[in-house]
Figure 1 (cartoon, rainbow, N blue to C red):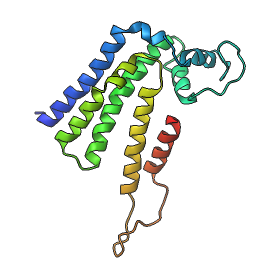
Figure 2: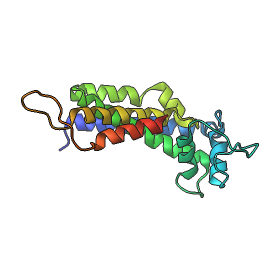
Figure 3: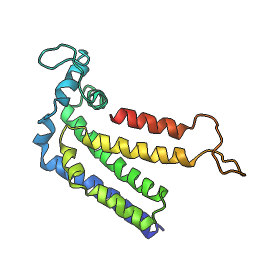
Figure 4: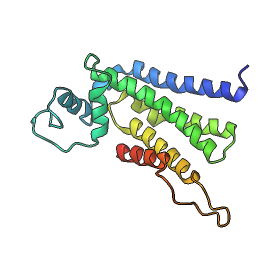
Length: 187
């Protein structure tokens, strides 16, 4: 039998997915508005033009390249960019809720308070609203949550000297590397 904390977290994840799917289904035209030009740049990438301006076809330094790459590569050439954005944002939104709960537990909050923290992220009006817009905010929030989670794991891991309590220098810790990658990709 599933305990009430797991059941409440499962309901929370369903709520997070449901809210994001609802906004995507309620506002499908928003998926193609492209206020920041991500879809246009992703199309240039997908067509083999690299990071080129969609109107000039000249190389450009566009912000942030990781999000544009995700749209261009998701999940293949047979899916419209708008659908790729919807799938990406719903998935990333759910992952952000999960990471928030893990981070809350990691800093010592009770399961109930961890679920409350995750609920706040699941219902965050901006994150839910941006699920239907091709903008990097939803993905960036997820990557930053992952970076903080991995950084805290990095700080807590490693062997300590029994006498002094200081952390011993050692091998490269995967959590530190993951934190750096998530932070780097998020910007």
